[in-house]
Length: 255
Image (cartoon, rainbow, N blue to C red; front, side):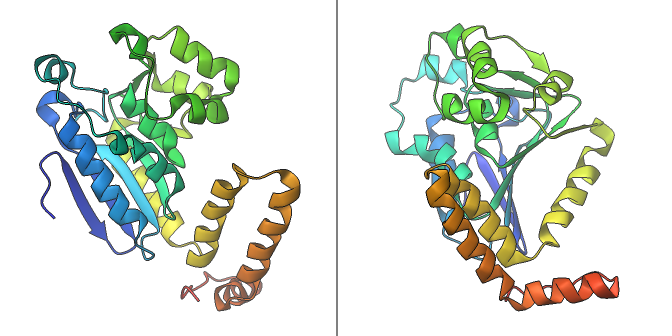
């Protein structure tokens, strides 16, 4: 499928979804929302996809809405496309935000919805909504407290302002910060670690976290144990134990 505002690239079990409006720093429009929602919906339905990287073309991740575009054209946004954050958070594949430059507003919401976040030293963050008279979208009040804590999340929303990658790392918003020159190589190394993991266990582990958010501890523990036992009966698990004893890298087959 051809897209106007995003780029989709698939390489084996890894896909990269790139927001592609570099002249506007990848600012969001209704068209981008629609394309992201459609693309992520297809990705979520793909059982062979294990890792999805969300990033932006050029120097920026996504600064949120293209304010000039929305000021000039008040085309209503299709309500269902606000489900982009849910798709990123709940799809079977592990989702990873690769953040350069501006990451603000809905862009920050999408990054927070991902399982993992890694930043270049160039990254700059801001919730930004209050400055344009909006209360916020893309699930930030749901995701951010789970990442940085309830008090810090409210501070970021109620007292918005720019902060850099070092501060994002300090508060736990991102897992690692890399030098810009090394960012792509470092990201590739992380992707390789994920792809080299046992596929069935990786998928089950992601599903555990999604399920845990909806369940009590008493209900979740047997759910988790059942998946743990299922993984333990796989050939991949037996191979992992053999490889550990034999001091070699396991060769996983996804069965």
